[in-house]
Amino acid sequence: MDMHQPGAAALTRGRILIEDVVKTYPTEGAAVMAVDHCSLEIEAGEICMIVGPSGCGKTTLLNAIAGFHAITSGRIVMDGETLCSAEKPKAEPGPDRIVVFQNGALFPWKNNLENVIFGPVMQGKLARKQAIDKGRAMMADAGLAGVERNYPGEVSSGMRRRVEIVRALMNDPKALLLDEPYRALDSLTKSVMHEALLEIYYKNKVTIFFITHDLEEAIFLGHKVAIMTTRPCRPKKVLTVDIAHPRDYSVLTTKRFRELIEETSEAVHEEALKAFQAGEREG
Image (cartoon, rainbow, N blue to C red; front, side, top):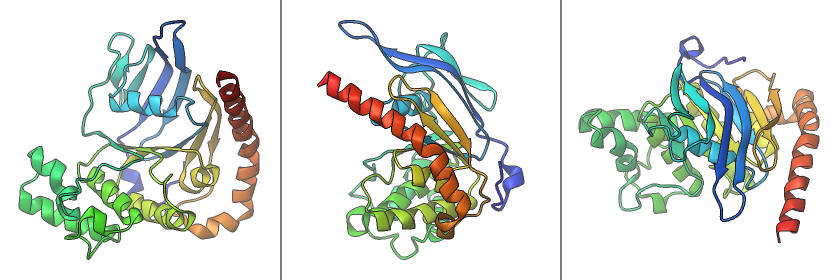
């Protein structure tokens, strides 16, 4: 993995090992398997992109890492500590793993800075003055200087996404778990947000587990891209993106980027077709 951002040598925390994980849901009939013997290694400080059809089990896997859902068997380990296993099916949620949801979760009655500092102040990790100073600095690094006193409804959707990511990073997590954070954005805003996320990432030592449907987004952002099968979810193909960081949008016009798209498009298309056909049969 090639990471040329500042402080790369210090990225020693946030390694996630997903080992033979199975998740089944009980139903009135036969149990439904959402995740099928899934194994994946995510190195400390790596951006791992998870690509797969809707309903394939990607979010179930993220929720297991976060501690929102139990697993049936296998185990998930972070930095050598078992988060969950057959003996302890549900991980304890914690500030070391912060989720940024697709639909957003900012408090509309608090201004952007108050949203950013809420977690560490409430948890007693930082005094309010310390949190304000840190929050202002991190917002400035994320291109949010000048909107600290604005409320979420007074800024663009792209800015709200940045505020959410800064709020997550204020807790100094080992891993950010992003569930299609840019799905609702238009293509122009999304392209700006991709570069903004990378700028934030280069200034913070954090592992990123990022779910998306967008193959170009995955290859542009990721060190690693795991293409998942339609339900039940498991890796069909794991690609190492051998394009050096730091990256900007000039990467999209390079020969290697197009080669990587071609190399993975067939696998993505196959699983999307299977999901579509399964949906037709279910309907």
